[in-house]
Image (cartoon, rainbow, N blue to C red; front, side, top):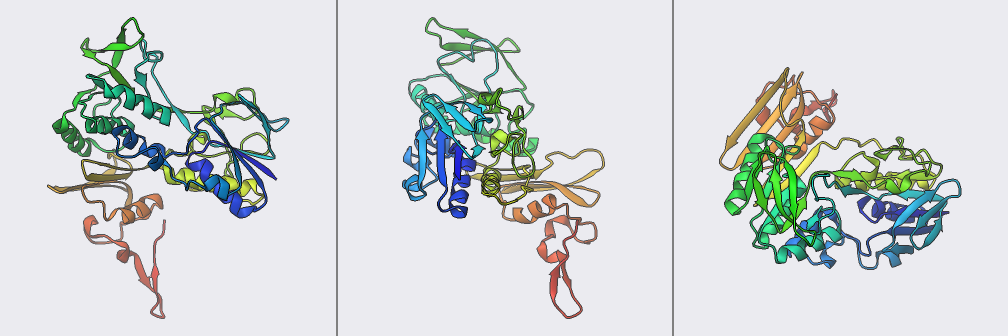
Length: 408
């Protein structure tokens, strides 16, 4: 059996490990545009200089050799011939018996002015992006970050460490709008402002001014304001890396369509990670790689961990975690409390917790994650929500045996 894996991110690497454990003698080939393996979560650390290129890797140096994997690195996949079971790339073709597509996603650069073709505008999704940002930032006096989500603020934090003072433009009413509520987000905004950042919240970039060399020198906002720039980092979302699958027979609707076993519409072809559109968080991508690998090896394993409404972040040594809903709506009950070291909020609907935000102290987060993910009711427990713990769900059998009574 020959397994080909496109992509060496979290999903691809975890799949390769699982295949080797399940089939000691199977042939495994991995194909990637990158010639190194790295964690995308750590790219901002490379920009700031906190991590070297070697320290971005999440596998041993001998991973491919130890697992008897042939790695085609630094090549670009141009298509997949599912009828003849061939992967086409810019240096030739590679046949397969089973194929896993784990190509991740690409930064979205909005079609505004010259953002898409300017020499000094970059997303932050790949190592090549991080290298370019680091190189351009070294000589930049004016840096603008478009987008104040997690990736945008990671970039801003890295640029601050380089001694820059980024200007951040965000079209939403708050920063981190997909990760936190307005109150928790304001804590981080204040920290970034104290460090030297300037924010334009509720504003959009509407145009650009370029010089003769093709670099953007000015961004125009929708209120007419102009921001000078030597470097622009765009963190305005991502899209699945699936363009090479056109006319391949692999069904896509933006992302690759997969069933509960992560199989695609084409025989012998599977997908995992961002490109499958199931989740954008690392642990889920790893699990998807493992499940896809098991099915590629002839087992029948269902991927059922589709819950991905979880965010963890840490800026300026202030940790935060959110799970589920960020804001209450009609019919919800909201509980919140705050002191100078922490902020906590729990949203409950019909007795079941549906969302939690913890900032400053996230030590009790596992309990809330379990209740929210598994839709556990707390309505029968007569005590304040802040005093709840797993012990409140103990029951006792007639023989004196303790037993959890966690029911949906």
